Length: 446
Image (tube, rainbow, N blue to C red; front, top):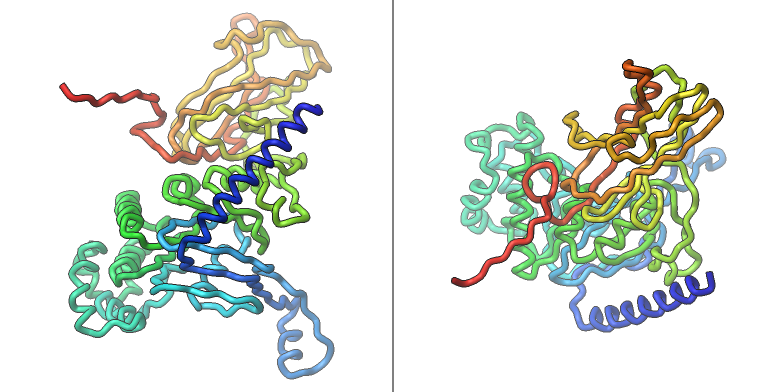
């Protein structure tokens, strides 16, 4: 135990040195966005009449304060691609709206150095009655461009949007995919120095998303600053230089995509503690872990004779921490506890994974693996673990569990749970198909 503590202290020292070096390097960089002690507070009323009474100065004030942002400070440097992640209600969209001037902070200040182009909520900045062309000119004018300058940019916008003659129709008739195509095309073709995107790309089709992320790469090479909010952890991992993690209006930490995605996994399942100091907040890797129940499917399908029951199940990552997200290439373990109410000869414990479309991708069981060939008696409990290395492509998958077996020649299902856990595989490199063949590619002169 003492040795582990010493190693932990040494790790913290090394991290402190690394952070100090990063701080020195950051001081030499130009700040594009500076957020200082920003708060955004809303008054929540139980009844509409309480709001009206306060508006007219009548009666007692009856409201609760909700801190959408609670003293958040962060710097974003020119040329960075920065991600902001967190659960719903963590304050991600609020901070983007304050940065872009859509909202005013209750307290604190924001300084922006550069022309911002923002793609926030779907529809923001567009007049639903105008057609696509008219909205292009409307948005360009709002950004300070002359009609002549917009004329010059129009061909590039139309080419990127690629919505054909629909550009001459009112945007209220557009599908969400067409709308985001046009909005993104406008946002990236007005020569922004800072591009801010809030989840909008999740609406477009996969080909358009690839086109947008290719544009991100071009922007990075041009030294432009990109800030985007996304629940797509694969994109966060692949494109971001740094990531900020928010939760319930508080900044929990900042760091590399891997560090913050790992911390986010803890937030998802309640396995984190808010530290007392800012330094500790930035060292989530060293925080103590709380035990917490795993999030599972509330509408799980199950059936069986119930002579054996799966009474507990959860995932852990390569450090033994409960999680709902696994890094591609890392080791993880599926845990399952089974309780028996009858004599069962040689029960078989099974695990399978399918994609969200329902295609069974892979699976195994204790008989195939020759891991357990004994009989069990009433009252016994067994904990079964499946430890594997994750080679599936980045994305969402569903895990099913089962306890089966044979009585003579008859196959019995004792308990089967379908799609009990949704696991996210986080990857910065997806190959073709369902899984990675882990190829080694060599190119040489001949």
